[in-house]
Amino acid sequence: MDTTDSAYGDKLILLDTFDTAVAVDPSAEDDAKRRFMTLILQTAHRNNGNIGHVLRATNTSGEVFAVKLLKDNAILSGQAPDRSAEQSAAHLASTAALFEEYRHLCTVSHLRGFPRVYGYGSCEDDPLILMEWVEGTSLKQALPLLPHDASGGLTTQMVAAVGNAVLRALLMTQGLVNPVVHRDLSPANIMFRTTSRTLEQQIADCSFDPCLIDMGSATMALGDDTITRRADIWRFATPAYAAPEMLTQDIEGIAALRRSPAIDVYALSSILYQLYSGRKPFDFESTDAAATGSFYLVKTKTKPTPLEPRCEGDEALAQIIMKGLSVEQCDRPTEQQMLEVLSTYLTDAESEGREGAGSDAAIDIDSGTHLKVDVAGERAREILEQARHDAMTRRRFIIGGVVAAVAGLSVIGAATHGFGIPDYLDGIRSSLDDYTWDQLQEISLKIKAAETRSEAREIAKRYHLLDADGHIPYPCTKRVKLTNGLEVGAQLVGIRHDELLDGTGKAGLTFMFDAGIAERNAAAEPPSAGWADCELREWLDGDGLKLL
Image (cartoon, rainbow, N blue to C red):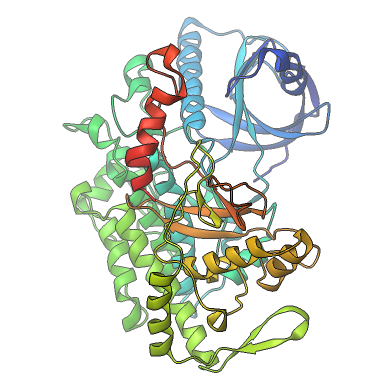
């Protein structure tokens, strides 16, 4: 996380109150208090929005957290500030805004691409949020390290990769009952996690692990902008990247406009414009906008310099970015439309790499052995069609919010369109995402049919689903597009581990979603009816299954 020097030294604090973000078993309440209520605030901190800043903290067990405090907090000074009536009113409003941020953090905490939140508490009567300390590098910091084109901007593929990663995180919220709009996307608020893969590895893979931080300006897409109404706080965003509607409060219908995902589309388009061209779409440093406070007028009365594509192939990228900078929300593309365009640049790059390797390219497998795939494409398609008719058609689902078993393949959110591939079409791939679901089904059946667990693990190793030490590599995820358009990752979590519903043994492969796909009420109606008649089960048996 971005850090700067601070005048504060390490400080031990004891929280007065603390409520965990998720329910805790009463028997574990004392453990939760010991874990979260005694903290050592450290000097590293990151300024975070208009009302607060974030400090790194550890508990007595050495776990690392992020603590978000109000800027006028009494915790670090050691004494309660002497506030006037006006300052006290502002403090109360800031407290309300901090709790609103906490509410939004809780909503997205379980989604990939957002920080985890642990709870909300107080110390010396000042509120705080306890959340994940994101180890990583911000896009702002990483910018000089990313591959650049001769024109001064990033390479086209790198621009698409960054946009793709951010859009996938934003689209994670679309599965929520009430989606969340971030409203302050900027290079400083886009982190690339480096816990599992270094930034250099992510750059080499052209695949980033983003985390969108600073939810201080976030809101729910549906309903009223409650904090604005309740506390008279009108939250703004970083002017260089913000949509015009985030820079004013006196136009008709502004409250509804400020709840639209189109705000995030505009901000991301501004970021991608900068990445591609090497300059921001609006250079406020060279205008009088800062002096007049009229960022809104600058963005609505003037247009950024058109983004010139470097080559004919970049025209679609340049067009979608410029369209995202439209003044009117209805003229901007949706997040899904942007993702579809950006994804083609990543897919095209991968295809070029495969074509350059030649049709008889050797595929690397264990111990330097090589295998040539030389089956003609037409013959392969014929065999696949026959295999779909001949292979098993029975599907079994176990859905308790976490697992679904599909014949020999346990999956959450995996859309399998055909089963079974003959062994002579069995190609070895370097990673999970390179396999089709048909191929994974066949691999799963081989693992399931192995006589011993050791033999099953050797099969998984051969297909690069386990590393040389017998561990599932990280990341080991295959992207899944559900029927509602939401894209999530299916993470491999087990090799011959989970029992199949039909009692025929263990599933060869077990997958789990890396993010939630929907929110539903799990409470029984009526309460005495239990799981059989609850709304969650009814949804899973109907619309839930249709997503797969």
